[in-house]
Image (cartoon, rainbow, N blue to C red; front, side, top):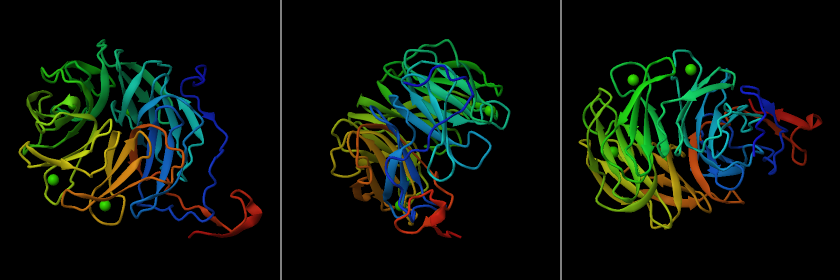
Length: 395
Ligand SMILES: [Ca+2]
Ligand SMILES: [Ca+2]
Ligand SMILES: [Ca+2]
Ligand SMILES: [Ca+2]
């Protein structure tokens, strides 16, 4: 449990203790290599450093915090150019500030809210240049937390709604330049809340009459117009796509496919070679994940990602190797999993992330270039930090 008494915005510095020694020569460091942060159900959240060739070479705890974490978001929270991470927790949410080497030396509570936050999104919600956070809370008021640019946040309720929100996405849904929010609600109507540009939301309305058990949503341009659309991952009923009208409403919804699967997560990206947005769904428990190729008009054609029957709670898409084909990382019960895209809608090969030798249950995954700074190379046999052992530095 977190230190509840930690003052809002006051960073606590944690000892930089790594349980797994980093390699002396850190071949994974360098710009352009995606790393992954996994949100853990019953253990510490994990960072895995990407190799740039489709694998992950090294994993360790992000911090000593032992919260039940449902999901995370990456962004530049304070004034440096190192990616930071915000965790949506069962209790108080957490921000950990990165130092660019793959370590997060400072973590702090995000406000003092103790709601059960299932998801978090980051964006510029008010008019300043400080990144803000918005949290989807289950059966409690959703909260918006405005950043102070230094790692501190000031939180308030989005509305008085106390829906079973399981997911939140930010996007420009009506004609103004203020970020809006879509909340996916479990067995309740999903809601859209229009931002007023000052950190408030001028009102929320039902996105549709659909009351599916929805775990996650994603926003993207699915059909041929310039209005953001929403795709929802549903439990044991068809996944749905809803088409934005550009005015903050949605003009209708359709099934992504008629299949009923236990979809817990969804990510959108250009998976095959056309310009039409595609969707990848993570399914759990013990089901094959699915890739659904968009036809640019709102329709999808779906297939299994692989033959693996995984318990995948979340999926993230990114370029993990050097080809131009989107790849997928799945957050699993057990070993997390990577599938490399072939650019035609297929994924092969797929492999477990064996660099994480202590797999638990990961509920979320986000990708970003976290370890971008070059690190000193140390001579063999010397511990990192023993400055008498400097041999050379990476240019
Ligand atoms: Ca802000
Ligand atoms: Ca707006
Ligand atoms: Ca496509
Ligand atoms: Ca790739």
